[in-house]
Image 1 (spheres, rainbow over the protein chains, first blue to last red):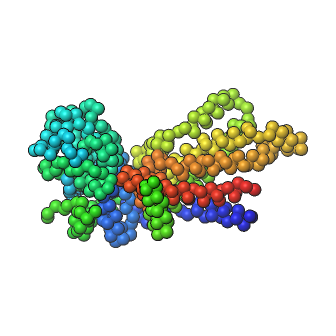
Image 2: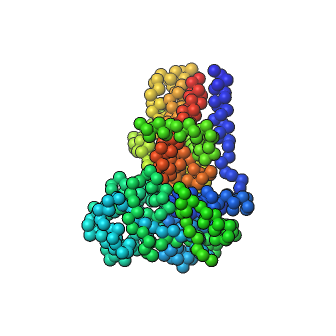
Image 3: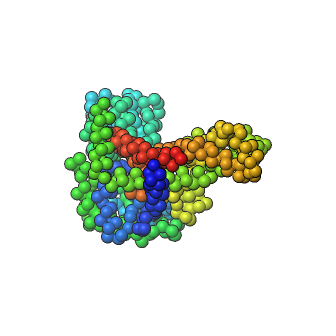
Length: 269
Length: 228
C-alpha cells in the first residue's frame, strides 16, 4: 500500500514537472474557424514550420475577433475573409502588406423542398428578399464573421433590414449554425468548404442558390503593423505571408481536398 | 444507442493508436489543472481555515461572498484575466495570453473559492473538543490550529479534489485564455467544444469518455494520498 502511495505521489509530481512552455520560437496567427475547420492549415503550415524551425500558433475565432486580436497586438499575423474589414484594418494602421491568398464562394443552403423558392432567384440578394417576404426561417451567424459581413452586405443590396422571429441571430460559428438550420428546417448562408464538410451526414440541407458574383469569398493575410506593436515578430510574419502566397504554399492550397473535393482556389498569376 | 457505441469504439481506437492530438490535449488538461489546483490550494486552504477558526466583524459577509464566488461563470473569469494579460492590458508585456500559464492563472482564480469554502466547511464540521484538548495539552494557538487541520485532512483533501474536478472539466477559461491552439493550449474540453462545433458529435463524446477515464486515474492517485 505504501508503495502505491509513493508511486501515485510520484506520478502526480512528474506530471506537474512537465514544462508546458515549448522551446521552439512561436509565431501567432489569428484566423477564422472556417479556415481551421477546413483542415487546410494542417497541410499548409508544417512545411513552413519545419523549414524555419518554428511553431505557428493558430488561434481560430470569428473574423471580428480575429481582427480584434490583431488590433490589440495579441497576434503577429491575421488570416481572414472579410475584404472590407481587412481594408479598414490596414487603413486604421493595424496591419501592413495585405495580400490575397485564395478564394472560394458562399452558397445559400436550405431544406431540399425549397419552401421559399429561392432556386428561381436571379441574384443572392433576390433570394434573401424572398425569405424575408415569406418570413421563412433564416439562421444568421450574427457574430461579425466574414460570412456574417457578407450576409449583411446582401441584405443591404436587397434593401431589407432583417427583423422578426424568422430571422435567427445565432452568434456562433459556421458549423453550429448549419446544425441549427438543419434542426430548425431553415436557410442559411454558408461557405462552401464548411458545407461540404457537413453534407456527408451532418446535414440534409441542400445548396439552393449559388454562382452569384456577390457570393465571392476571398481570403487575405495581413501582418500586424510592427510600428504600432514593436513586439510582434514581423520578419517571421512576412516570411509566412511570402510562403502562403508563394509557389509552394499556393500549390498546397490548390491541391488541398476535403471529402474528395477542392475547398479553396488560387488566383491565376 | 448507436451514437454511444460509436463513441466508445472511437475512444478505444484513439487510445490504442495513441493519437498525438489526443495525447497532447490530455497532457495539457492534466498539467494545467494540477498546477492550478496546487496554487488554489496554497491560497485557499489557509484562507478557509482562517475564516472557519477566527471571529471577526463581517465574517458572515465573507462567508456569503465565498459562497457566491463558487458560482463564478468560467467565461467571466476568462474575460477578467484576458483583460489583464492581453497586450492592451496592464500585464500585456509578459505575453501570457494564449499560453498555458494564462490558463493556469484563470483556473486558479476559479478554484480558490471552492478550496476555501469546502475547507471552511470541513473545519467547521470538526469535533469541537479538538482545539481545547490541544490547548490543555500545552499547545499554543498556532499549534492547536495545525492539529485541527491535520485532524480534518480528509475533508480538506476532498476540497482539493473537488477543485481539481471543477478546473479539469471547464471550457470557458481554457478557451478564452488558451485559444485552443493545437499542440500547445488545446485541452480535452476545448477540443470537445471544437469537434462539437464541427458537428463531430461522436468524436466529441469519445474525447469526453477519455477525459473521464483520465480524471478517474488522477483521482485514484489523489485518493491514495487522501487515505493515510
